[in-house]
Length: 566
Image 1: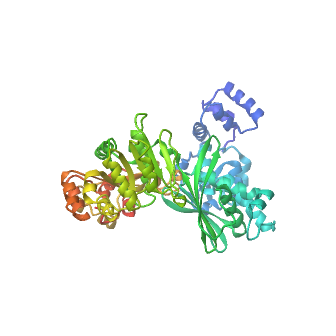
Image 2: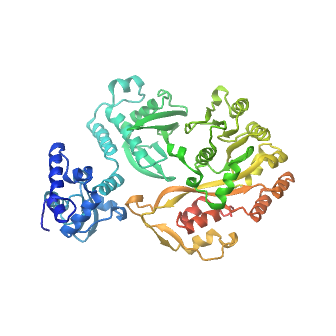
């Protein structure tokens, strides 16, 4: 390959002028940055334009990093220090030829160095610098976390003094275990960057395992030396204002962290287990505060029905589903839909996950007697129009919620049931009279979260016959042949084929016939059959149509729904 300087190559391609190059070179001398970086900061061009122009000028391949699937074996070929310092990634190996995507393929020195390190022939390719940086973060981890972990490991291996057994707050703060403090901070930053909902710190016999839950699925991030376990758990407990001397009982806490220009709320749970203390950090996603009902996953006719229910002046609207199915986010979206200076909205939550401007939120504290029941009774004296209850767990809460609906208030809450019609049976189990249910319940909505297909690598798919059989489409009245989709896996989605989540729903509204069945003490299965006859779309059927429209996959539907939910 004929070597040119970057500036000359970009001028020859017509991407920049000589005047712009001169200005960029002056700025480069002042800042000490790479020329390509300076050109993008001056907005003379983008890093993608630079990469495409160089690919044409130099006659080398342009790599779409989003579509590259990089195996662990490839990652081992080039030392991580070289990958990070020179912004490059191995992307393919065929025989003795190694294809390397580089931000600067004009760097002859590093090409020779890779050839020496790997004993392979290097085929240069180019990719936008920002895309390579994203790939490095995905495959090697955030640089700050990686470097913090290396510091911890180095201290462990060098025999640097460690706190043994019990670690007091005074010791930690006085000696300032900088490596541990830095590691925990960078770990939280990476979790937020990767949109993880939870961080799991799990003690095992010979190490501390760290896992992130992204899009509802747990994946191992790294393993930390056992010698550092005590410092790390103590650091998190200090941040969450827990008692670090108490290692025998579960504890809950909260962290408010500042990340550049925004505050992030974290909920922390600590539980004693066999090999130490397990900590789970829930990252509270404040983007839920701005969700619309359409963002949550409601569409078309079901969206209209839900909006109509939320706009009613009184009654009860219940969201149903297992823990982690997004019920609270949907309740916040419902509040966003109706919030107004003209109405008083109050909530009773345990815990208050998101602080919403314009509404009155109460944190339930059962340990001091501030239960859901007591909070609701107090809220009833606060002139509310709308009351949101985090969860109806017992007879007293269910009874007061029903009374509130009967006296002209709109009540929004959640229950743990498998489907929408089972709401009736659950309320009866909580000793709510059937006639009260029939007269106050506006609608019951079952919800599940499914992973979205990655838009960058979505393609048509023919699911295995056994998966199609398990969907039981004929029983759902679907007779036409439907096209389905999947993500083949790319760098953008970490080779999973999924990126983000959405909800599927089953909404049962109450008409006169359903109300008569409730007062007549019909079974949940009888009510379900009647609701479907009256237009209720079953949970799985809703999901099938979302799979058909390329939003999710057949495999996701089978993962989150049961055959009874048809």
